[in-house]
Length: 495
Length: 95
Image (cartoon, rainbow over the protein chains, first blue to last red):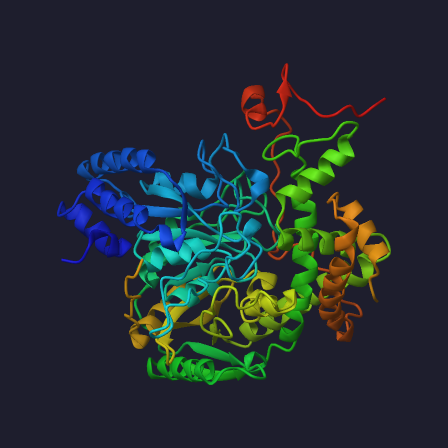
């Protein structure tokens, strides 16, 4: 039998219910794996006491015979989620020492369902990054390596710790958040499955805010079924988040029939970028053929404003960030700079924020400040919001024309070496999100599914985009793709 | 639109982030790269298009206008870098 920490949620659930294993045993296996994974730098705060207590409670609940699917399942939690009494720093030095007095709704929902928290996972600072190189905790290392080269690769970002932890079997699944691709890009870089739900499906309450109109939490797991199970436990209406949707939560797992006959899959021509690597082009063509073989109808579609999604995002997201991050002022929580004689409150703000924020966060806060400043608000911010309307309209049009889901690459490349973008200008890094960011701007659900490996054996992912609120059907299409792709590769353990 | 060091300094001030004068030229240059990228938006015809205010069409929920929370002074102050006598403490604001 393989190690317990390498189980899927579904397999573990069945073994827990049959009494073959206990939640305590499962949790101990994950805690050992997490403790021995220092070289990956995925876990940044371990919470073994909490995990053991929750596992014991889960075993009691399972023995009672009425345990939900997530009961006793050990998870890693992205550092962006506020967890009561446990450090929650959003990967930032400005939240050094911050221990929330409350629990985020998503983690509370998971705990109510019996899930076990192993600890907090590394991430790009305030979720701003695509390579997990902006974290105050240092880089996360991808468990995958390129062929025989032992150069450290990025796990992607911002949910890089979550992606690495799931890929390396340190936990059964992890929470992620996605503002421009932060679940789907790292999932693709590490050969796991990651779902960004429809905006409003998961409550944002208690999740450190980056760009509130784009942020959405979602599951990062070993396969589509596990994403379906975990999403069901994470989401649901929350009166504490005014943008949380008051809609019933369907049984996402029950939707996984694998039957997509008669469904229409759109292939957007604008996603065929100049200079797209051959391996990505081939993966996309292979994925299209797989869905066709499964009985779907393939149609070419156009999403004409795709090109403007990234520039619009880099106005809207920094604008919202500059407002959201105004709260880090050294007064109520986190870091406060040591002041010099005669320093007043303005110096306190300026020094605190200069010391506490990393370079990428400062850059985005200042870009956001600029695009919202008097004289530029209309030229930048309002124009970007109008372009956003057009981007959403593009999707509405293709869905109205009968398209059920859209297939695209998840990323423009496989995982790249850590440090390789150090000399590039910031925009080069932003291009990582070129296929994912449209989905956030339009508020749609999107899922990254591992679909193959490149010549160096690195995983590559495809993205499926669904209709709003129809995660169930999206998951089923992803399930059909997963079955056809048959991706089973795992990183060889070196850490 | 090109950003000079003076504008970069003004933006840093508005954002309440201290930037050393020596770092301003590099910052201005980064702003220019990013804003150059954003300039593409000028190619789009947005005539008559409404700026998006919310991505999912839904009416904000309403509730009774009553107090639902409170009496949590200790929890509110628990993470403050400097809390005294039940208040957040900051450097002197008014002379």
